[in-house]
Image 1 (cartoon, one colour):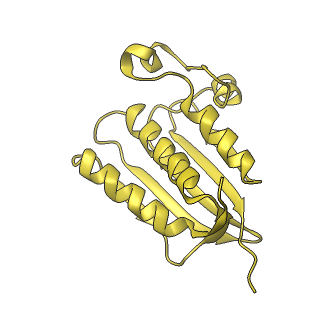
Image 2 (tube, rainbow, N blue to C red; image 1 turned 45 degrees about the vertical axis):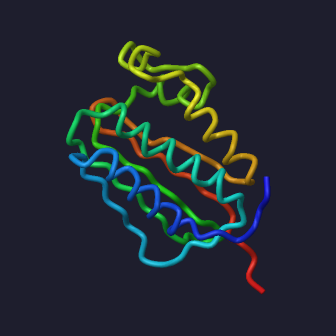
Image 3 (spheres, helix red, strand yellow; image 1 turned 120 degrees about the horizontal axis):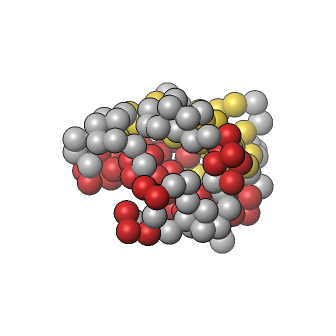
Length: 154
């Protein structure tokens, strides 16, 4: 991994634009008012964001909105990907970052899920000294938060 200062908001904007092109009927909103400069490998950051957006699209009904937010928080840059889909139970949420874990039959290999995407996102985030968490409840969508340390300013 090659780490350097990268703008989380710009990478998120590019990811949202790509997702809108591939899924033109899906409302995908970006909320990013200012640069969010983190010390990271930009390709790995792209991979995490693309994975979270793809996951939200794949596991929610057609037309369900997805919102991507990039913002500065005290000491860190935070990326949030939120959906209004079916959400997960507490037990599912506690295992969602495990390799090969799929929450139900709808997330089986036949529908494109391998159970690796969120595990990879968690591993890449940890490798950047960050953390990824999920807030969800059955019937109330899911919100994934990725926090990374801000890049040091000179």
